[in-house]
Image 1 (cartoon, one colour):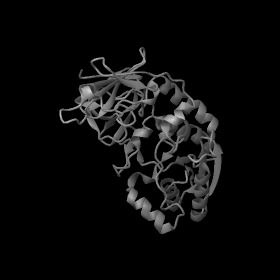
Image 2: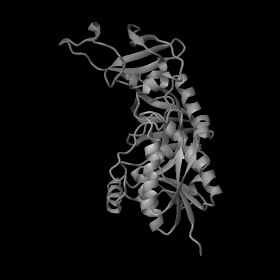
Image 3: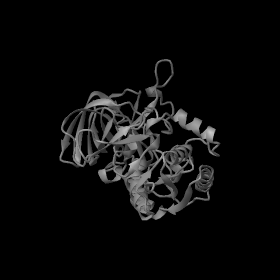
Image 4: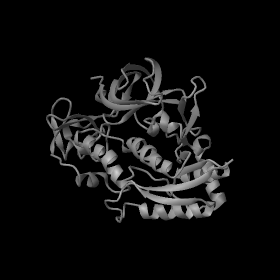
Length: 371
């Protein structure tokens, strides 16, 4: 009986490298695929594509698997980056990693892998897939065993066809063990830092990057009582809850008796009037939302869950919080929270969970505030 062929996305990072080795150890025929998704300025100091490819190829050589590079830059620009710019221009704050997984890593990549004769695909994400114990033929997306690294939030738009062909080798082991395996194998990237931030921006200044692509118009920065305390450089460059880089000095009338000043936060955007509203204090009522609405919903099972008590994340680095789901068909839903949530941000993803099972989610369209 011939071995099953698995094509694994190898980024040059330690996670996908160890995942590739694990698959080989498990008896699969493994082929590595390095995806190039951005090339507008890949010769700049901020884009690490060339070094990542060298690292991925070096690892493939050490563990004894074939690897090829494939260019998805055109697909990425059409399916991910264009949406990213549209969202920012509209004053929202998108999460391109969510769209990249749905449109590139598990669509363009999956299609390409199938042309190579793959039975399955794999990535170095921290998550798990299993066949449903209660519904024959259904696949479920589960959180990773290592809760500190779980990436199911970014994978919530995957569908049954994608999950049925996907392996996540790292889902059952902690990150510390991944590093240990890489050291033990002598992988050249064993000490490589994990990548952070948006893949096509890298470590470069975010505002400087957006400047190249977006039109923007300065406008007033106001407090909830309508007093102007500064000028914003363009609504697209701010996100709700932002504290750093707002550019408000110590406005005397808003100082405490001892001369100190509470931190300022971005609280609302008035797109129609090109006005940015800022508040003082982390727990200002304008930053707290007891409910949200979401659209563009995508459900792992193919249909919306039943209304009722679940848990949710409204941002990646957040503990699950109890909520009540109110679906409106399969594309829209509302969430009511037991405790008001901080800086619920339009454009970000609200992702639903039933225990360890990721059910799917949608794009936050709006929220209701306490004030």
